[in-house]
Length: 287
Image 1 (cartoon, rainbow, N blue to C red):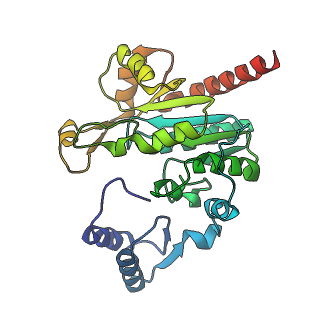
Image 2: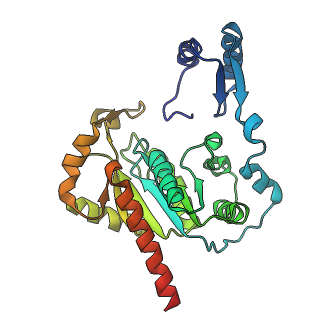
Image 3: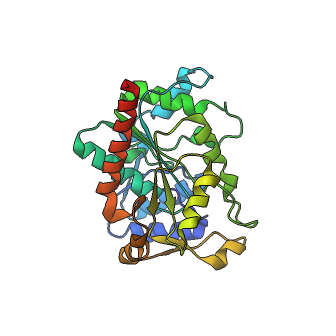
């Protein structure tokens, strides 16, 4: 998986040596540099470990097929309901929530197409966030066209779309990519249900109202992560550090906020609210 922190070649080697002690195969699901791949081959050969590349399992990626198809440039209408998951930054459980919601919807009987907030996870049976979105020279409507392309290829009942990173700079020293990915995704497709993930920080209800106003995009639900950001790291040039907290702590802190706030033990209630909201739109259309 792609890490949110930069890993040195030395650290990469240490992790590989540890991993290859008790396994027979390694699935490469992220893009490796030439140095990293050479080191992987060397260690794998020494420990008789087989290397499996993602492309050997799933063949050509939908993203590649889309780019080769040369699908047009204008923004296209997407008739499939879209559930979008954005967040305050990295490591706020967006990817976990995307999979949880998709699995719950599948259990009910919906056909779900997931485009995650992470890259290089196609091997999990979902679509990775397209790499062309990180290219400096790309068409502004590429993401919209890609989702339209998937709607015709997958023919889902519902889309679950994850948005990488945060929406705004955190501090001057931690600009969080200025929320560029979020800005592009929000303007490419219109969500029918928006979930915004927050860190498990100490906030008042006024903060939630201000966040809705700041976003300018409708937020239907807040989902609380079991991570917080280390405040000291926010004012350094080093990668932000994240502190994992017990789920019980999350529930005790946020239970008082009532409706509109969800966490892991409330996934079923979140999905019920999601379906109810989407069905309400259908009734309005009929009227």
